[in-house]
Length: 497
Image (tube, rainbow, N blue to C red; front, side, top):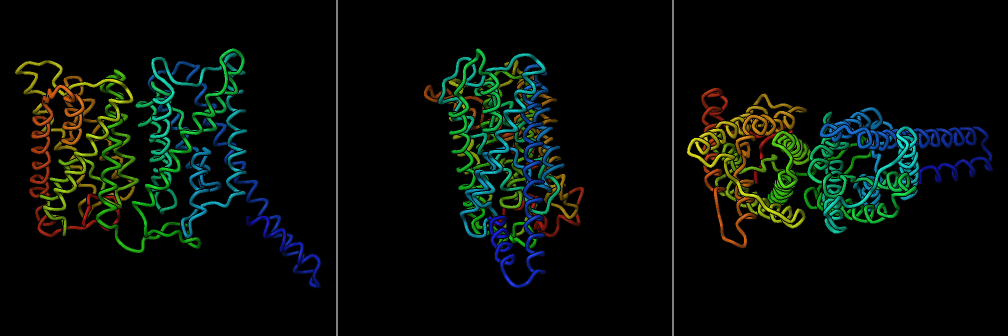
């Protein structure tokens, strides 16, 4: 694109009458080629490190923390190299920016740049895979994991590649410092949730590298099917982002996105649907896998953090009727009872949809109940749901709906409230902290037997926790609570219609 234009300008100047113009044009061409070389080198390094880290964790038997290692190398590479190339390291991400390049004022890439990025990423992926194969002496298989078929692996690859690309599109180039953390931790959310089904790839360069390096004896070909589903997910992420942010334009001079107006209520509702759906999907797939409460809490907490960073400036990032209740009771400008009710309804509906999605993918269901079905077990779980839902909702109000609002750490603080509660009481059946999740799990378990269970009891306790958080906010911030507050920084529980 720009390189070709500069070459053409240089040639025309070279044949013109002005020697100085010719020299300046050729210098511009050299500068442009240097920029391209730097970007492609950055993409090579980041993709190579990502694939190499994936292979070493798998073959080295890193276990549960392997996913965190992979997420971390993506995060640190984005922070180190994002300022050079944009930190794609993934053909699906580049594909999404290519689609955006065809849309006016949508901050995309031209076709030639996309092709160069993808070629370099694929080469780096293959070389990274051969590097870990050379160290360990063997590779590993790419394909659906034991007990699953192609459509299940393809579906989770599509859904979680969409999550990764969606996060990139909604946090990158927006003048924040948390973009690398948000993008990297999509791997924590998706890797634990989907790894047992498809391997948790979410990247055509990783898929091709694993596939090629496993040629001697393990077979070849699944990378093409994986890439197909991953690119569908990337395209879907572009479409959903456009639905949520239809009025945003990319300011090429400032190199960041600019809002022409506040998000419409329809955009806020769609944002709540997306966030709550993925939260339910991640929780359900982790539980169906049989992962312990520690891994489930970390994966769900990471997902909540990511969604708050990606969508907090649109809907407020509630994804939880207890949080919505707390925000409403706190008093928040034009956030009326009708708006709060609509939020809660779409959260519950999208959680139910997410619950049936994990049930279809994992071919199973589970009830929501205390580990020990005794009176003492019930008391412990229900009281813990009140306490830790209070923690979650109170932190939301304190860091995202107050005058001391955090700019870069609100999502981290809120997301890790799920880690706090899940680690503390997940062993006894608690740590849900969300009425939409409670009801979603209950619905998915009840159909077709109509065996509705404990979801509503859990939800009632969680709503009590949310209301208590609003009460505590009034006690601790009495002067501030007298005036309705509207977030000015975009990461708070705003959700105003």
